[in-house]
Image (cartoon, rainbow, N blue to C red):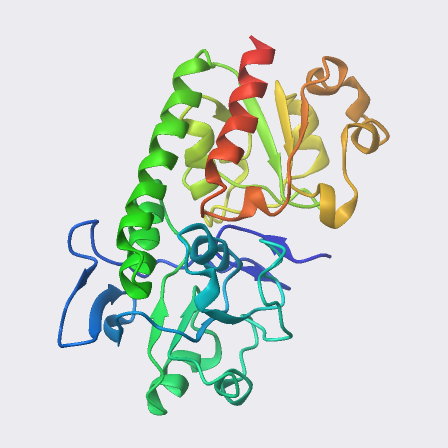
Length: 305
């Protein structure tokens, strides 16, 4: 089975849902603590970093995107192996899922940004006086904006971060307003060909909720973890109006592949060409490209009305 993609983690077995609090609100995310430094409230507490760090290491694909989007790209010296966007990010073999403190320290970072504290990496880096910002997977959109502003405060790009979050809010609001509410319409969001999905309480599910869509995975989440594995029979019985595939790049899934699955060609979404092929990365990250994910859903909602 391929790794299950979520907004917070990509794990070989199961899904890790990070519930630690992210940074403070837009106005309190950072405050000058002394000359040449800034203090940012992150999930690992109050972190003091250089006011304009010059050697940033990012172990989170989402945060890598954010750093470049707010103009801090030139300050980034290394990013993790999964950080594939933007193309000019200094991608390395560093892992955010099996982090190695010694390998990270070789880049002489004055700031390390990550979304998961795997194998005690935060304490390992703090022991050698490397500032670490732990900004976990956002549980909602407000946390997304907070984390972007945290990174702006930490890198000397406060104004750029606030502009980015403002633009994101406006674009998302515009998309939602332009799409007719789809109350009563149902959808299925696929994470992998093994039919892992998301429920309405997850970040991804909340995005769909902006349009009033009903999630066919909700009733199947017996463990209440937010990421159930559905049965083929359940999907066929629910016969969703819309199907969104977040496993196109990783697993070669698409409308044509779906139609070849036993029984799936009879689904309304397949027959009516309401199968949406998403970009895996955009649909699994909570950063600057979130409006593109929202736009894909909005376009589909408008089409199905």
